[in-house]
Image 1 (cartoon, rainbow, N blue to C red):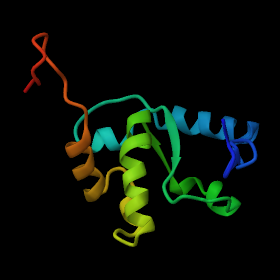
Image 2 (cartoon, rainbow, N blue to C red):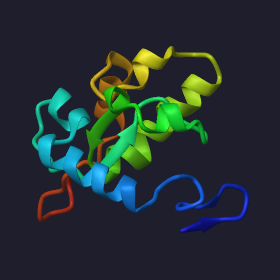
Image 3 (cartoon, rainbow, N blue to C red):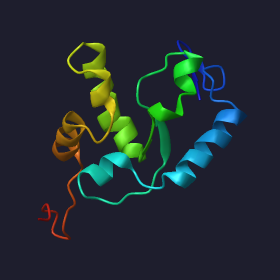
Amino acid sequence: MYDRDRGSSRQRGYTASWDRASLQFKRTHPRCLGCAAVGKVTAVEVTDHVEPHRGDQTKFWDQQMWQPCCRWHHDVVKKRLEAMFDSGEIPVADLWLNSRPAQRLTRRLQPRRLDADGWPTG
């Protein structure tokens, strides 16, 4: 994917080496951390950098700061957490998807399941 301001994913460091490392990480961490924190079981889809690396290769390759997540947690919850981090509202520790702020956002933002009649279940 190409973003004029950020460059392509390959230009940002997501190379074949990253693909291999991410695949191995996902094999050893098969469940979404954010979902597990609220009692759900969801398969991992994304290897997420807890702290945004913004091109810093040391942060990019620090596997201690990678977390397994589903696409929804990556695209919805983590996006909100990063905005809060960037504005100084939360520290880097709260960017983990099992942190209290992440759990609160997950519960508040998670899509509701609907019954056949169109009303939310539970």
